[in-house]
Image (tube, rainbow, N blue to C red; front, side, top):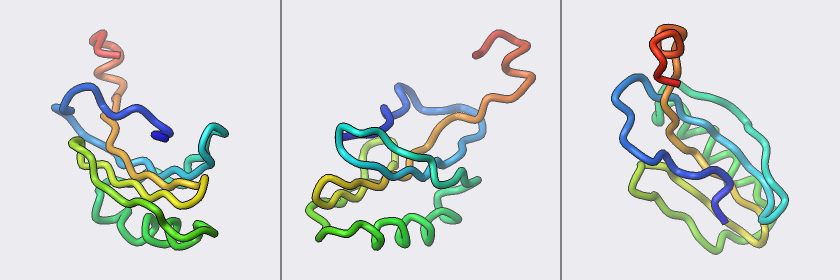
Length: 93
């Protein structure tokens, strides 16, 4: 049911929060990219409220990502490391 795999390890540099929505087994769409989880809280709640079914699950995982699921629709807010040009030139990506 997870649209994007969680980060395999804790990020040591800057992190962005990606808000996405979709349908089970159908993929999803990125709704926005946020500099912090706090900034994305309102847009996440709004997207979760837009799920046309009753929510059957809402949870936070070990990475701090939050998810809401209703019927076959989902919304997720997940942390992802920000890759800078410096990191690319250094071979990090």
